[in-house]
Structure formats: structure tokens, C-alpha cells
Amino acid sequence: MKKLFTTVLFILTTCFYAQEEPVSTEKKFTFEGSIDTYYRANITAPNDDNQIAPSTSFADKSGFALGMANIITKYEKRKIGGVADLAFGPRAIQASFIDSTFVNQLYVFYNISDNVKLTAGKFNTFLGYELISPVGNFNYSTSYLFTNGPFNHTGLKADFTLSEKASLLLGVFNQTDVNLYNPDGSYALGVQMGYSSQFLNLLYDKAGLGLEIDFTGGFDATESLFLGINAAYADNEGEGFYGAALYPQYKLKEAFTLGLRGEYFTRQSEFIEDDPSIIAITLTGSYTVDDLTIKPEFRLDNGSEDIFINTDLEPTKSLGSFLIAAIYKF
Image 1 (cartoon, rainbow, N blue to C red):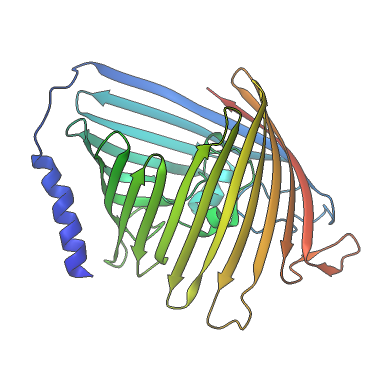
Image 2 (cartoon, rainbow, N blue to C red; image 1 turned 60 degrees about the horizontal axis):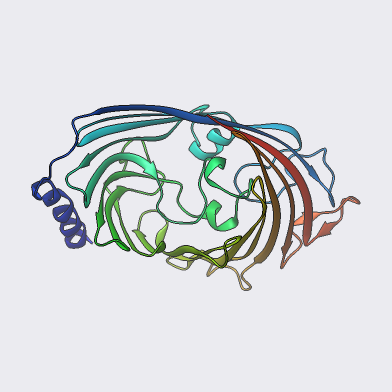
């Protein structure tokens, strides 16, 4: 592990000595962000207990609820720049595990050339199909794969553009989702290999998540139909998960797209005889008016065991729910 860590760190640091190319001297400052809110109700279970919801991140409260406010600033001068991405609200609290002020991303970057970029600080994970911010997701609720994978990394990464279609990422990070400092001296190693917008991701984090192998991709089946794909396997000494999700999205009109997320997820453990699994089907509409997006969503989660309760307060394998979210991007 030490030899592998040293090798990756050497590759990253030697990037500083790559041949530099002329770049623009123009200064660029950008400011953007989003806010989101939603209403959620169980269809097949009571709504007087906020604990009755799919065990996935965010959008899990009954009635009218808040998402988060996201403020992103970026400053770039010639080859160097920095990003401060701050978030506030319940969605941010769940993602940070700390407090109501969430540093979603905070990093500096150095464009060594047109083909090599170094980034140091905290940044969202490169694994998986979904993101913390709802702006980057089609479905408003999140998947089990997203919930159980990493959210963020703090460390150093290098992005390489190998050709018009091929890319490579190498990174050294703190333990997964340990962001403020390194408490135990352990490190994680990450690799992403991309080709034509299809990505094979690997993360080795012995002290945290263990080994995760993830595939994320998608393609346009027709001018109106897009199919997204995500599959992952994670193992840390017998504990972990695996699953897959498909994301077909069909544009009915310029302002309205209908999308489905079909997911199969299994949690594995050497201490459990039969690994519990769940199938979750989420149907989402996305209607856009200028910078405002309205997302009505129906979701059905069906487990291999009785993990929910019905309206009669009896154990059951399935839960049906509905939500409608409003997301404004500025």
C-alpha cells in the first residue's frame, strides 16, 4: 500500500514539471447557485412519522420541506483558479454530517496545459451517477448506490485528457468523506478511466469504504431518448454492497422530459445469512420554466424483507411515495 501510494503521489507531483503552454491572461469571476424545496407524502404508509421513508439520502421528510441553498464562486486567472462551493439547509446537513454550513467543495486548480489539470482541496466524488446538488440530477430523490458510495474526497487529483475521447484521473485522498483533516494517517487511492463519456472508476480506501469498482455512463439512443447507466461493487473485508441502475429519459417536449430510475441494490455482510436486497422504481417528470424546474415524482421501493410499515402499521416489504420539488438555478 505504501509503495502504491508513493507511486501515485510521485506521478501527481511530477505533473508540475510538464511542458507549459501559452494561456489567456484574462481574469474570470463567476457566481452561481441554486435553491430547492419540496413536498413529500407516503402513499402506502402513514405520514405522521418522518422515519417512514426510503433509506436513501435527502428528500425523506413528510409534508413541505426544505432542500438546500447552494452558492458557488469561482475565480480564474491565467492557469490558476479556485472554487468555493457552499451549501446551507437540511440537504447540506445530511451530506456533511457536521452542521448547517456545509463546504460542499473548496479547492484550487492549476491548468498545467490544455491536457493536464491538478486539483487540491475538497471536491465531489468522481464515482457514481448522482450528485449532492439536485441541479445535477434528473431524479430529485437519490439512489441506494449514491447513498452508500462516497460523497466527497479531500486530497490531490490530476486529470489528463489523453485524446478527444479518452481521459484519465489519478488521485490521493484522505479516508472517504473525512474532509477537515486526516485523523489517522490513512489514505485512499482513486483512478478513473474514461472513453466516449463512459467511465470506469476505482477507489481503494482500506480504512474506510474498502475497494469500490464503479461504472458510470450513458448514451443517446435517439434524439429524444437518453439512457444512463450506473453499476457498482464495494467490499471491505466481507462488508459492502453491489447493485445497478438504469436511467432512461425521454424528452416529450422542449420543456418537459419524463425519466425513470430502475435500481437493484444488495447490501452484503459475512454476518448475515441472506443478504437483503431492494428494487426501487422512480418515475420523475421534469418541467422547466426559464431557470425554474418542477419535478413531480412517484417512487416504489420493494425489499426482500419487511423493512417498511403500511397504513395499518403492519410490517411490509414495499413503500409507495410521492413528491414534488421546485429547483431554481441562478
